[in-house]
Length: 249
Image (tube, rainbow, N blue to C red; front, side):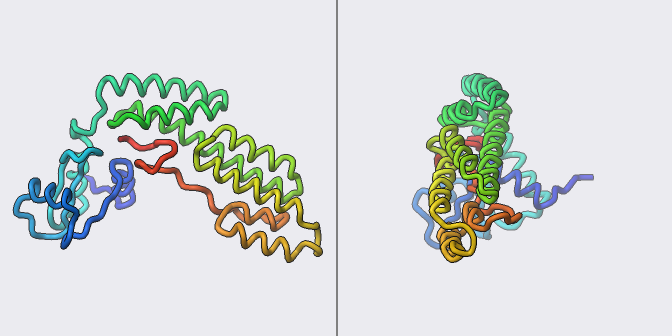
Protein backbone atom coordinates (compact mmCIF):
# COMPACT_ATOMS: atom_id res chain seq x y z
CA UNK A 1 0.00 0.00 0.00
CA UNK A 2 1.36 3.42 -1.00
CA UNK A 3 2.26 5.60 1.96
CA UNK A 4 0.72 9.07 1.85
CA UNK A 5 2.89 11.72 3.47
CA UNK A 6 1.28 14.15 5.90
CA UNK A 7 0.93 17.71 4.60
CA UNK A 8 3.58 18.97 7.05
CA UNK A 9 6.16 16.59 5.61
CA UNK A 10 5.22 17.59 2.07
CA UNK A 11 5.70 21.25 3.01
CA UNK A 12 9.12 20.45 4.47
CA UNK A 13 10.14 18.74 1.24
CA UNK A 14 8.98 21.69 -0.84
CA UNK A 15 10.83 24.12 1.45
CA UNK A 16 13.98 22.05 1.08
CA UNK A 17 13.61 21.77 -2.68
CA UNK A 18 12.55 25.16 -3.93
CA UNK A 19 11.91 28.85 -3.41
CA UNK A 20 8.32 29.74 -4.32
CA UNK A 21 7.37 32.21 -7.03
CA UNK A 22 3.77 33.12 -7.88
CA UNK A 23 2.76 34.65 -11.20
CA UNK A 24 -0.60 36.01 -12.39
CA UNK A 25 -1.89 33.47 -14.91
CA UNK A 26 -3.89 36.20 -16.72
CA UNK A 27 -0.87 38.43 -17.25
CA UNK A 28 2.29 36.39 -16.56
CA UNK A 29 5.79 37.73 -17.05
CA UNK A 30 7.10 37.08 -20.54
CA UNK A 31 9.66 34.49 -19.52
CA UNK A 32 7.13 32.64 -17.38
CA UNK A 33 4.51 32.59 -20.16
CA UNK A 34 7.02 31.26 -22.70
CA UNK A 35 8.28 28.59 -20.32
CA UNK A 36 4.81 27.32 -19.43
CA UNK A 37 3.60 27.37 -23.06
CA UNK A 38 6.59 25.37 -24.24
CA UNK A 39 6.53 22.79 -21.45
CA UNK A 40 2.83 22.45 -20.54
CA UNK A 41 1.37 22.34 -24.03
CA UNK A 42 -2.41 22.53 -24.07
CA UNK A 43 -2.70 23.07 -20.33
CA UNK A 44 -5.99 24.73 -19.46
CA UNK A 45 -6.75 23.83 -15.84
CA UNK A 46 -5.43 25.69 -12.82
CA UNK A 47 -3.12 25.52 -11.05
CA UNK A 48 -0.18 25.63 -13.44
CA UNK A 49 2.87 24.39 -11.52
CA UNK A 50 6.50 24.24 -12.58
CA UNK A 51 9.83 23.34 -11.05
CA UNK A 52 12.82 24.99 -12.71
CA UNK A 53 16.50 25.34 -11.94
CA UNK A 54 17.97 28.59 -10.64
CA UNK A 55 18.84 29.55 -14.22
CA UNK A 56 15.43 28.69 -15.71
CA UNK A 57 15.88 25.14 -17.01
CA UNK A 58 12.67 23.11 -16.87
CA UNK A 59 12.69 20.29 -14.31
CA UNK A 60 9.04 19.28 -14.25
CA UNK A 61 5.48 20.47 -13.74
CA UNK A 62 1.78 19.86 -14.19
CA UNK A 63 -1.61 21.45 -14.74
CA UNK A 64 -4.74 20.79 -12.67
CA UNK A 65 -5.46 19.26 -9.29
CA UNK A 66 -3.12 16.68 -7.75
CA UNK A 67 -3.86 14.83 -4.55
CA UNK A 68 -1.11 14.30 -1.99
CA UNK A 69 0.07 10.97 -3.41
CA UNK A 70 0.22 12.36 -6.95
CA UNK A 71 2.01 15.50 -5.81
CA UNK A 72 4.57 13.45 -3.89
CA UNK A 73 5.38 11.60 -7.12
CA UNK A 74 5.98 14.97 -8.77
CA UNK A 75 8.36 15.91 -5.93
CA UNK A 76 10.14 12.57 -6.24
CA UNK A 77 10.76 13.18 -9.93
CA UNK A 78 11.93 16.78 -9.35
CA UNK A 79 14.28 15.79 -6.53
CA UNK A 80 15.78 13.04 -8.65
CA UNK A 81 16.38 15.22 -11.70
CA UNK A 82 20.03 15.32 -12.78
CA UNK A 83 19.52 19.00 -13.58
CA UNK A 84 19.54 19.91 -9.88
CA UNK A 85 22.18 17.50 -8.64
CA UNK A 86 25.61 18.88 -7.79
CA UNK A 87 28.48 18.05 -10.09
CA UNK A 88 31.38 15.95 -8.84
CA UNK A 89 33.55 19.07 -8.70
CA UNK A 90 30.99 20.90 -6.57
CA UNK A 91 30.56 17.92 -4.27
CA UNK A 92 34.31 17.74 -3.76
CA UNK A 93 34.46 21.43 -2.91
CA UNK A 94 31.51 21.18 -0.54
CA UNK A 95 33.03 18.16 1.19
CA UNK A 96 36.12 20.22 1.98
CA UNK A 97 34.02 23.15 3.20
CA UNK A 98 31.81 20.88 5.33
CA UNK A 99 34.91 19.34 6.91
CA UNK A 100 36.36 22.79 7.68
CA UNK A 101 33.04 23.94 9.12
CA UNK A 102 32.75 20.83 11.25
CA UNK A 103 36.19 21.31 12.76
CA UNK A 104 35.46 25.00 13.32
CA UNK A 105 32.16 24.19 15.02
CA UNK A 106 33.94 21.86 17.43
CA UNK A 107 36.02 24.86 18.54
CA UNK A 108 33.02 27.24 18.52
CA UNK A 109 34.72 29.16 15.73
CA UNK A 110 31.44 30.28 14.19
CA UNK A 111 33.11 32.92 12.05
CA UNK A 112 34.84 30.14 10.11
CA UNK A 113 31.50 28.34 9.70
CA UNK A 114 30.03 31.54 8.28
CA UNK A 115 32.90 31.90 5.82
CA UNK A 116 32.56 28.28 4.69
CA UNK A 117 28.84 28.76 4.15
CA UNK A 118 29.41 31.90 2.10
CA UNK A 119 31.83 30.04 -0.12
CA UNK A 120 29.34 27.19 -0.52
CA UNK A 121 26.64 29.68 -1.51
CA UNK A 122 28.62 30.41 -4.68
CA UNK A 123 27.88 26.88 -5.89
CA UNK A 124 24.66 25.16 -6.93
CA UNK A 125 23.36 21.62 -6.84
CA UNK A 126 21.84 19.27 -4.30
CA UNK A 127 23.98 16.71 -2.47
CA UNK A 128 24.49 15.30 1.01
CA UNK A 129 27.72 17.29 1.40
CA UNK A 130 25.71 20.52 1.21
CA UNK A 131 23.30 19.21 3.82
CA UNK A 132 26.22 18.30 6.07
CA UNK A 133 27.45 21.89 5.85
CA UNK A 134 23.91 23.17 6.48
CA UNK A 135 23.86 21.24 9.77
CA UNK A 136 26.91 23.18 10.97
CA UNK A 137 25.32 26.44 9.83
CA UNK A 138 22.21 25.56 11.83
CA UNK A 139 24.37 24.94 14.90
CA UNK A 140 26.01 28.33 14.38
CA UNK A 141 22.67 30.09 14.19
CA UNK A 142 21.41 28.29 17.28
CA UNK A 143 24.52 29.36 19.18
CA UNK A 144 23.98 32.99 18.17
CA UNK A 145 20.30 32.88 19.15
CA UNK A 146 21.19 31.38 22.51
CA UNK A 147 23.90 33.97 23.10
CA UNK A 148 21.53 36.83 22.35
CA UNK A 149 18.80 35.33 24.51
CA UNK A 150 21.42 35.14 27.25
CA UNK A 151 22.18 38.82 26.76
CA UNK A 152 18.52 39.65 27.30
CA UNK A 153 18.39 37.63 30.52
CA UNK A 154 21.63 39.18 31.76
CA UNK A 155 20.22 42.66 31.15
CA UNK A 156 17.01 41.77 32.98
CA UNK A 157 19.15 40.67 35.92
CA UNK A 158 21.02 43.98 35.85
CA UNK A 159 24.30 42.61 34.45
CA UNK A 160 24.87 44.96 31.52
CA UNK A 161 28.54 44.00 31.30
CA UNK A 162 27.68 40.38 30.51
CA UNK A 163 24.91 41.48 28.16
CA UNK A 164 27.23 43.73 26.17
CA UNK A 165 29.90 41.04 26.05
CA UNK A 166 27.37 38.68 24.50
CA UNK A 167 26.25 41.11 21.80
CA UNK A 168 29.87 41.99 20.99
CA UNK A 169 30.69 38.29 20.71
CA UNK A 170 27.89 37.71 18.21
CA UNK A 171 28.81 40.78 16.16
CA UNK A 172 32.40 39.56 15.93
CA UNK A 173 31.49 36.01 14.92
CA UNK A 174 28.65 36.91 12.53
CA UNK A 175 29.87 40.11 10.86
CA UNK A 176 27.75 40.85 7.81
CA UNK A 177 24.99 38.44 8.84
CA UNK A 178 21.46 39.01 10.23
CA UNK A 179 22.65 37.89 13.66
CA UNK A 180 25.15 40.76 13.75
CA UNK A 181 22.40 43.23 12.89
CA UNK A 182 20.28 41.78 15.69
CA UNK A 183 23.21 42.10 18.08
CA UNK A 184 23.75 45.71 16.99
CA UNK A 185 20.11 46.45 17.80
CA UNK A 186 20.76 44.87 21.18
CA UNK A 187 23.76 47.11 21.78
CA UNK A 188 21.58 50.16 21.14
CA UNK A 189 18.90 48.86 23.49
CA UNK A 190 21.43 48.15 26.21
CA UNK A 191 22.92 51.62 25.86
CA UNK A 192 19.48 53.16 26.23
CA UNK A 193 18.77 50.95 29.23
CA UNK A 194 21.96 52.09 30.93
CA UNK A 195 20.74 55.71 30.82
CA UNK A 196 17.36 55.01 32.42
CA UNK A 197 17.06 55.45 36.21
CA UNK A 198 16.26 52.32 38.19
CA UNK A 199 12.97 51.76 39.98
CA UNK A 200 9.83 53.83 39.68
CA UNK A 201 11.76 56.89 38.52
CA UNK A 202 12.53 55.23 35.21
CA UNK A 203 9.32 53.26 34.74
CA UNK A 204 7.86 55.56 32.09
CA UNK A 205 11.15 55.76 30.22
CA UNK A 206 11.45 51.98 30.20
CA UNK A 207 7.91 51.68 28.86
CA UNK A 208 8.67 54.08 26.01
CA UNK A 209 11.95 52.31 25.25
CA UNK A 210 10.19 48.94 25.12
CA UNK A 211 7.82 50.36 22.53
CA UNK A 212 10.75 51.62 20.49
CA UNK A 213 12.16 48.10 20.34
CA UNK A 214 8.79 46.37 19.95
CA UNK A 215 8.81 43.21 17.79
CA UNK A 216 12.44 42.53 18.67
CA UNK A 217 13.87 40.39 21.43
CA UNK A 218 15.31 43.53 23.00
CA UNK A 219 12.00 44.99 24.18
CA UNK A 220 12.23 42.49 27.05
CA UNK A 221 15.35 44.11 28.53
CA UNK A 222 13.21 47.02 29.70
CA UNK A 223 11.07 44.69 31.82
CA UNK A 224 13.40 43.62 34.67
CA UNK A 225 13.13 40.03 35.83
CA UNK A 226 10.50 38.98 33.29
CA UNK A 227 10.40 35.31 32.39
CA UNK A 228 8.80 36.04 29.04
CA UNK A 229 10.39 34.42 26.01
CA UNK A 230 12.43 37.00 24.08
CA UNK A 231 10.74 37.81 20.78
CA UNK A 232 11.91 38.81 17.36
CA UNK A 233 14.54 36.20 16.55
CA UNK A 234 15.69 36.80 12.96
CA UNK A 235 14.73 34.20 10.39
CA UNK A 236 17.49 32.47 8.48
CA UNK A 237 17.85 33.81 4.98
CA UNK A 238 17.05 31.46 2.21
CA UNK A 239 17.49 31.36 -1.50
CA UNK A 240 19.28 34.41 -2.85
CA UNK A 241 18.26 36.86 -0.13
CA UNK A 242 21.86 37.13 1.07
CA UNK A 243 23.60 36.02 4.23
CA UNK A 244 24.49 32.43 5.06
CA UNK A 245 23.22 30.03 2.44
CA UNK A 246 21.43 27.04 3.85
CA UNK A 247 19.60 25.89 0.78
CA UNK A 248 20.47 23.18 -1.66
CA UNK A 249 20.95 25.23 -4.79
